[in-house]
Length: 418
Image (cartoon, rainbow, N blue to C red; front, side, top):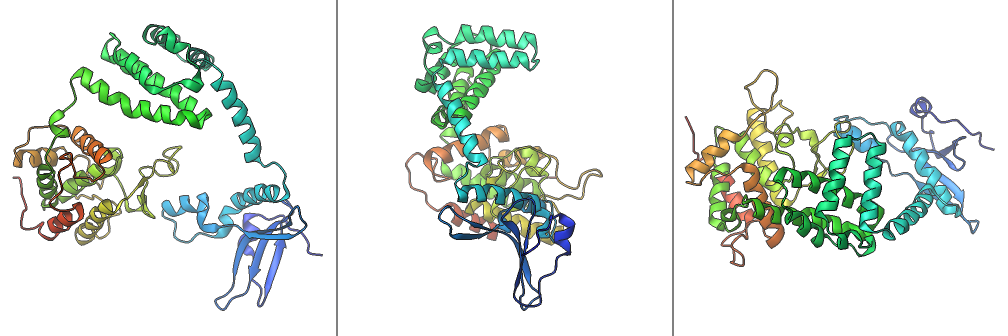
């Protein structure tokens, strides 16, 4: 009979693989969970695993995937090179506890949460829109939110949202009537923005209760600003109809910058990655991990893992060029956009001067970088091809081709500002 051991991090770190064969060390906390050690030509290995019988009486053996552990991912993102599998003992034990229940047909924690979620979804879908908002406002009062704010939101809801829409069942709710009601409001822009933010939270809560309402939230979030900008006359129609040649010229100008290449390539990458510009300017190479860019480190943001942005092939080419230039000029710097100026920070802090220079050189009137990039990303989302902004016209060359050409000739088209 194998003696069970109360596995701890220290005990796991002290374990040694056998000289030959394999060894099973069961845990005394979770029955069926343990550590499997086995010999190998290079010293042997170990892994967390489970050994249990399923409902049919057959023995099931499964191994915990070390590389998919969130603990391991966070440590690698934090720069730790050597990671012992003992560090994810708690996560592996929790995995074993839930997996064993699943194999034996016992309701897992996920099953219980799913049942509660379905009951909560059914209650929510049977409510009217007005009742659901009233519940949220009441929760705000219980959470000690400002009395003035909750009263203001309550009055705005009854003023802006028509009674017919308030009486609509949540199961039949759509985003367009909500957007139209808010846009047509006669209130000041600041008041409308406050109410829009509140309604965004309401629909986000509804979407978290029912997957069917996720599309309503997404349509509201994506569809509101287009109509809002038309109302306040801030929509830059010139950017929406920009010819692809002007984008080619702008991106070639940025790639051709030699003296301020950090700022120029930061601007170029900002067009491709929808992340805060401040996070991009201070980004380090540890935040580029397994094809994703992580704007936040673990501990900086509760949702750091879900804020990651996928690096598509065109962005990857830009990052490779950044890596090449940074390695040549700043071989020891951990930042994507390092600088020798500044005592407190070792990375760039602004790109405004470079942006103004690029627009001036191309004879383009000033637009904010945020507005310019948002228009570019919007066209990308609408028409697919990043530079297919001529609404149906064929491109003379692909994004990859002109980018590689710009990189190859970046020294010849350098524009320096004194």
